[in-house]
Image: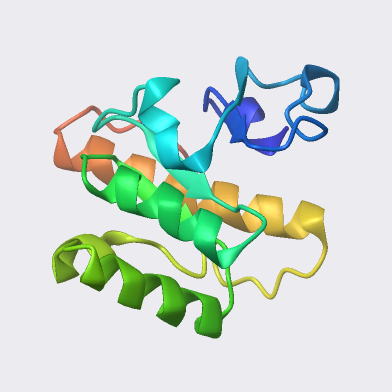
Length: 150
């Protein structure tokens, strides 16, 4: 819900039929049920897209990340512990993903606000994505939005 309220179009991709249900994510513009090994059979990700990976396992994270990092995106964030990140990063190296691509990934995902609850974690992720989006707009020379806080 937070992402859709701040201007992101949310597409949910999950391999679990019980999770990929529109009623659970009414703010999503699309929900896709598919295998993590074949993401691009179902969706297109471009250099303007923001990707957050939070699957239910190390192997699923790897399957999603390796595909996403072979292309170009505006942002990639991955939820996970240091142990999970180290495991997935090693697998990415073994799969030939360059270090600069691995370093591009925001992990652990989110702005470090000591978030604990799912709602707080959502806010921290949205905050990080907003910051990256603003930096990209600024780098592209887009006009400042006039926020009185800046």
